[in-house]
Amino acid sequence: MIRTSGWIISRKSCPFIYFIKKSYFIYIGETQSNPIKRWNRHLDPSGSFSQALKKRDEEIYNDDMEIFFLAYNCPTIELSVPPAERRRVTQFVEHELHVRVICNDGKLGEPLELISDTTRTAPLYCRYEWVHQVIDEIFEAFLIDVNKITKILTTEE
Image 1 (cartoon, rainbow, N blue to C red):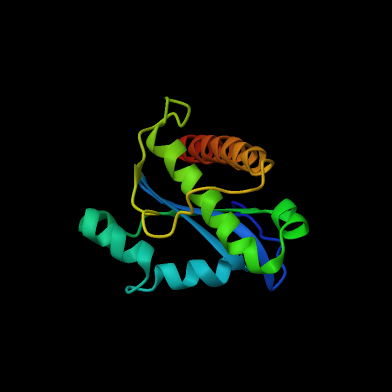
Image 2 (cartoon, rainbow, N blue to C red):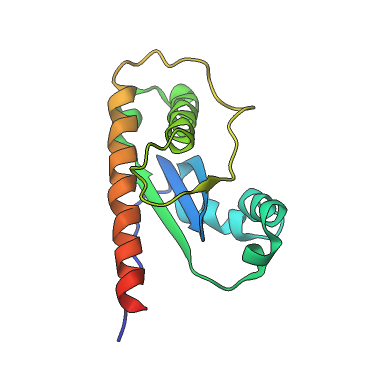
């Protein structure tokens, strides 16, 4: 039997919000390029995901369990925001998603521990009102995807 592990549609340069999940640890980030390149850097022993996970739980860091990668392209940001401002807007989205995971009201179904940090990079505001709709859409898609992943793993056991 085989299992599809997913797919990514991306150009070399476009805004993405991404999630990396290993066990109950979650890492949220943003990138202005293909997320696969960014994930590769995170998996390097000196990468920020690897370092954060190792600091929190070295046993899970060393375990060969599955790691989940989720990416959400943000075409509204790409089409509506000048290139020089895109990173700031995706950093705002990234931070707001951190807040939602931290303030999880049970929608995630399982407790998740956030290991990424936006305290140094989070903009205080975003001048685009529609950005909250983007945040809502990404969070809802993330909830659906995390639940799908959990169901797939549960049925395989």
